Image (tube, rainbow, N blue to C red; front, side, top):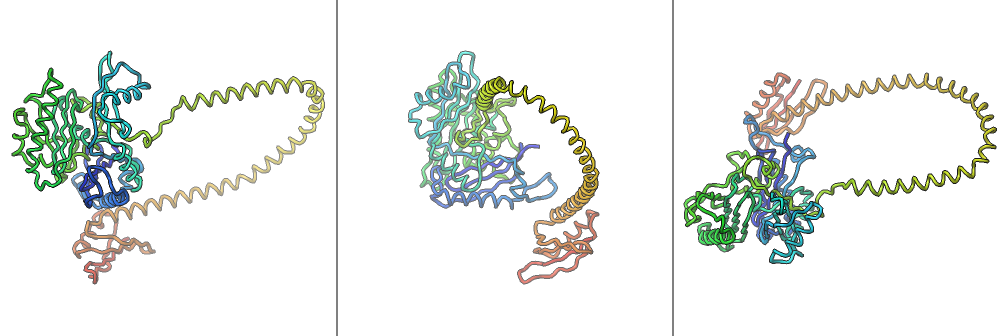
Length: 501
């Protein structure tokens, strides 16, 4: 069964959380942020944002979604993950740089240092304040091709610290522009994600992001339409830049353009967006089953983060080949290098063995004469010890006779404990069934056992829902339900008590 994944993405105005299992988006929620908590995709107040994260995970427990089209359920985060869930977080990608490097054929052991040296040479900024994340992509026999993303250390470190303060340890980190293209099944395409305050333009070629442009839009802009001239200008500039560096394979009208964000809700602007390129424009697809009520454009980055777990880059099709884990190495789970562990152990054991053998030989040589003289005494002791062995054997047999009753008593206790465990599991199953059958408006506050059965107590907004709940219990065929009382309380709810046998 596919594991659940929680994807978390931070914007200046809100935090978005999406829970997915395999190819299905199950739950989602967002929480608004007061101005100044996050600025330009960078967390400013770690403590307050950590509290917001905790509130968001708590709130999502109350979000109801359809399950198998039959009934609505609510489940705690602990049940979501069962200890096996994965949290994936996203960075905005602002102030980040991306390159495809061409290197000589190299083994993996040398690749990291070679990438850092080449990135330091080709990138227009110092690497001191940047993290590098890279991935080998298909090349040829004569070259090693590597996709590299360089992103601000400060933004990543603060994000990871904030997650830790909130009590969560992320397993994967990625940049928003890279996950937006996860669901695009085209070898060559343009993706435009435009919102009121931000813009991302990604050009894909050979299933690899070749050009990525991320920038903030004017903060004083009140409407999305006011940003359209800037978006059109940046689109045209990005296409022109790509074509100037890929004159042998420029972008033409047959290259599809995919849009998301606020731009997806403004189809009347698409024609002006592509301008002379005259490409077909459609909404950015998703490779995940999403309920109709899920606002896909708002959660497009969260969906992309969750899609990382599907491994589309390894499946047939034209999905992006780039699937990075940009989590800094300092916080990645440490893998055990068996070679480094085994070699020192073997060396120590070998040296200890040699020393022990030499000492044994030396002592044996010195003690041979002494041992020869003691041999006669040992033989005499063996004769006397034989009598003692006979006595101990008789005592052992007597002890075995005493042990057997204790074993029999232990078996009785084991059988009793097994019976009690079975009864406990049955009781737990009944309570779980009674609670799960309660409608959303019926709150079960107490389940009490007595000699006549069980008493279920709680409250509800309407008397009818209590009666429906009692009928649901009867319909299972496993409960004999009697409505003891339904009283309208001073707090505006109906207090009820059910007798169940």
